[in-house]
Length: 363
Ligand SMILES: *Cc1c(COP(=O)(O)O)cnc(C)c1O
Image (cartoon, rainbow, N blue to C red; front, top):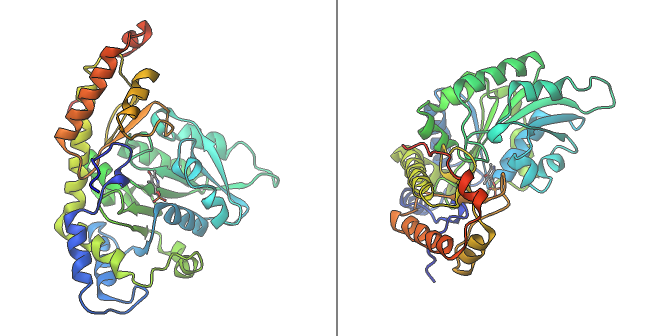
């Protein structure tokens, strides 16, 4: 059965043609197992070339594994990880980071638009210095954030400065790293190791792969014995080439950037259309491929009855609408049409009208 595109998440989309093409090419004949194949070697080299550095590269199945295993590599069980309160590692990984690290605690910081600030990090790093408190060891950033915003290079540099001051390592959740590269105009290197990121979890799934995440250790010392950790956690794919070949497809063809650019552009169009509907309020400035809006409950119910799928509990609440590599203009227009109809059928509350005017940033 064919499913219409939805706006729930970028992981609702299928496999993009380039990733599928390379997967099919890797399916010709046999190859050594457990990552000892040419595809895996080539994909790892492609990452080193793209990031302009000799990093250590590992491939795992998903983001939860990438985040929790890489954090575990940065922490002892008595350490802690400073992250934003809306961070995926806190809200959507079922305690996997604590589980994988045998107890490293996540310490939650606040900050506007899903972003940590130097002040929020320092507040936690200096809160306690005694033996009874889990020692802060890592700052975890999400780029782009769970609220679809971006850390600027200046913000990243400021976080690096306080991280050095308090001897904190930097982990980056790059579930939407490609979207951040496109939107920021900065290179992968500039957004990571050049501003002190020690390890990046780069998501392939949301960018157009069937499955797979790359873990890049820019600080190579931290990768010691990491392969054993992956294997023990059940994250060493024996037919590794079916993760690494599609990655090579995305990187070699440039599809990783085209997919992200398309998704970002679709979200910009969606935002622009939504901003014109009375009673709909943009909650966060859109910078990548997600739009967060507040709308009356009756409108949400009406959309759900028409089989529109979207999340209402991620990030700041409200409705999160995500675009992806395969989102189409037609499908956005259909959604906008149904939202307009639902809004027109409902009497609009005064405060919704007053609150609505956050001007969208047009691309
Ligand atoms: C999707 C996502 C992940 C990865 O989730 P998995 O379902 O484990 O692959 C990680 N971080 C963020 C911010 C995400 O949106």
